[in-house]
Length: 72
Ligand code: SF4
Ligand code: SF4
Image (tube, rainbow, N blue to C red):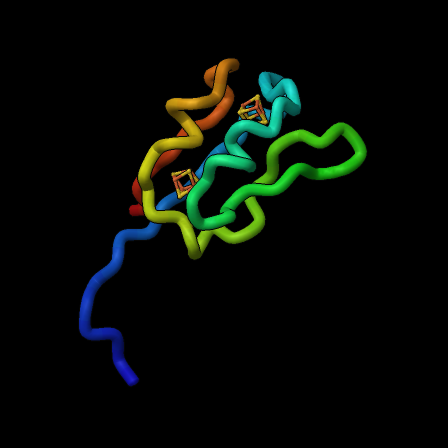
């Protein structure tokens, strides 16, 4: 069945060298887009399709290591 409503898609980019593994973005993302990746527990995108573009991860990151972009 064809989709009837266009839904915006997003890219979440983690600057791995800037990430300090604090886990804040992982814990606060309302739709579980992010996870802590072993062995250094740096943030990693694991479910980009669930991203609503709320920007919470970007706003809460103390290291400014997260970027949220509308997919073109
Ligand atoms: S909030 Fe920033 S520093 Fe903390 S885990 Fe996420 S990307 Fe890394
Ligand atoms: S923009 Fe919002 S929904 Fe998307 S990864 Fe960040 S906190 Fe999660």
